[in-house]
Image 1 (cartoon, rainbow, N blue to C red):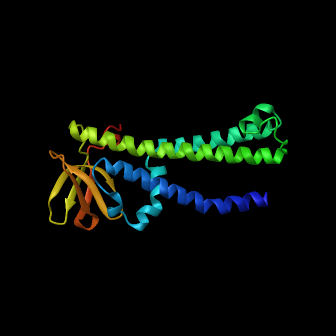
Image 2 (image 1 turned 180 degrees about the horizontal axis):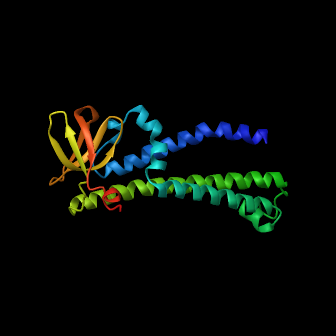
Image 3 (image 1 turned 60 degrees about the vertical axis):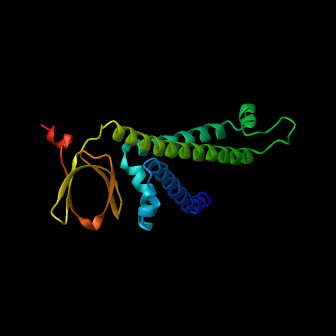
Length: 205
């Protein structure tokens, strides 16, 4: 038990680093379609919290990741329980002519195999999300299908109804009503951001 906890603790920093890299690539794929180099507008803090922001931005993302983890653990448990079976040994790449592996060695191979599957699955999920989100936003801009549900007030007392599609610790990214040009405004130039046309609040009884 102690060895397992020590191993988990040693993997946590690597796991978080992996999530950071995934987040950077996902955001880059998203903003590339908008002709924006997002790294120029991101601080170190934005990069460090990007994994948490990605996982909590939409419930479906967090649920999908948890399901992927649960399925990986379940399959690993089932294969480990049936490690003596020929089909399991074949799955981990052991040939009949090879020297028989111990149960512990087979379990280690199963863990390595499903770790690879998990990494590949999570990477595919993040990359496809970055691409699809970017394509969806571009399509909405081209077809004038955006909803302008925020009002930004600036220090100059000017205000605009906008489609606010993202923000970080330093910048807001938005489109003004009636324009297809993406605007990037420093946080310091904005006095307030008002959510208008809030359907959840306005439709409540």
